Image (cartoon, rainbow, N blue to C red; front, side, top):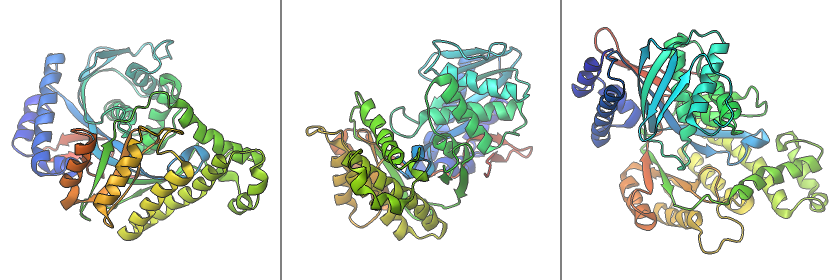
Length: 440
């Protein structure tokens, strides 16, 4: 579609159904209309020679169950959220991919040079190059592309901005140059591989898979090379609940040892029992051998192993509760997950920290505010950063105001669970808007 067609479609409300599905209605719909029009205007300034465009969106994600279980080949439950990265893109005559992200410099990737580059690790250019290399290796006929991106997925807030960016690039290349043939699971694997091999970060597949598929996603990592994936079609917003993510502003500086200790200690228990990962360990045998394990493993390692067994099972039960529309059970399991992360996993505060305990403080305030409604827990890796709360929609603004009062303006984000994964927004021949979306 051309730029004028898209702008008039947004202005005249032809995209409202699609935008409401992604972001909700009311003031948020108006904000998104303005956001997309602004992105198109900035695209035109950056790439003035292109009037035919394509429009893409890829969501961030939130972990719901399975705190620190994936690296032990356990189970997780996660969901895509309304915060996303959007792209206005156009094909070009160059054999170059150009991507300008708002607030950052332009990445320029020459398609004749897609091998890994020393010194490029940790950059968005590395991700683009790694994704393009995989499509080229699979036989896709890549050619020139330029794109302008705008992100609502704040870096460092635990919503995986990197996975959203990877999926955005992947869905663009797959749709434009590969006929959309890759499929959601394969696209997630492409993003993960680029992050591992080109970006230089050893990440699992959860983040990319959830952003690619959308909705609630249950993943069993018993075979991490081919995880079992189930998408759950549960409309959380229709049930009257909103997801709130609060950034408690705790610093992640010098926490590498804290994060690394979790898998290291879990693996130490597994190895003491003759296995590589806890998923390979018989749970009942683990409990019977605790006196023996304490001779070679720390008590904290033993408790973290106990957390794994319960937490991996909880993720399965949470998925089952959503499958049967049992919110009471789901919320109780979320509360149990939070308690286990606090008492057994011990990842809500750095060891020995007494002054800065932002996450425990935020959880205490959330439980006091919510009472028996909804649920809250630590979000993501823990130790510092964010908490997650499921809040009745009628309480969401008041809850966010309370969190902002304590942790600073804009600390709490009120989000929707988004049912669509990485997608293209387009118009049919009759000017009806639609959104591409894939099942597993």
